[in-house]
Length: 302
Ligand code: KPL
Image (cartoon, rainbow, N blue to C red; front, side, top):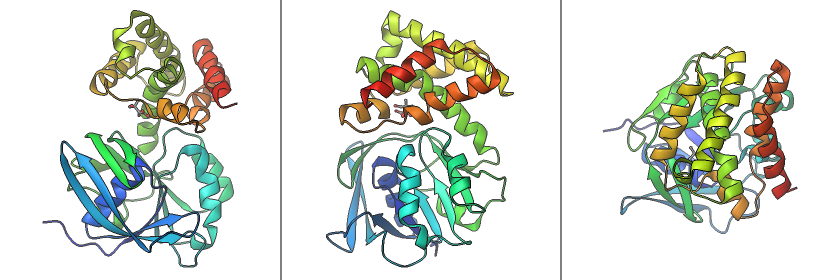
């Protein structure tokens, strides 16, 4: 049986990951409040998570972000380009004791937030749980993964971490080097997401189409060179193997970037390939195919 926690989580972003974690935390005994941009229709809502024909549900509170009331534990599950705006809209709820947990894809937003909210305690949540939205507050939990939480400043594990492991998050751990996990996830996203968005294909096609498989290999060569320049020891061959394993494990997925493009939303390209290309430039590494994909995907929502 899980221990009842007294932590109250405020959540920004009711997409697939926001709903998945909100339902999980509510089932663990936490109070959960979804913060909305406008006035919600009702002060509470039911989140439904579907997995292999079984539905898990949880009742959560819903409140306008603009209302008063401090957020002690704040989970930010918006897309990377929306984080700064979402946090600015609820700045009045954030104080010196607020712990901000960022669960977006990509990198580069931590630096932005350090300027915007100096001295605030920031944490990353790097997850490979597979989830997509079926309808508002209704999510398909399509694949189990690993969730790593850690402080961007190397702070010790906080008491609220106890809310996370267990239940449906079977592999959830505290990671003192979560920045490495973030980079490793970014490298996989760089190799998969832009190609699937441009070729409008499921992840599996990057393994089955010889032309796309070749492009993935070239991307991995470039990405591994940047990783090595940053001090990571993973070879291009090891990265190719890791990426092909993710492609095989998520063959039926439509990547998050493909879903954004299909829905006409701004993509996270600037925080994924854009971040890699900026790092490559800083370190003097040439990444022509990544640069090409960056400009092609950026042009889709130019
Ligand atoms: O993280 C993903 C994404 O779509 O953003 C992958 C691993 C590529 C799975 O689709």
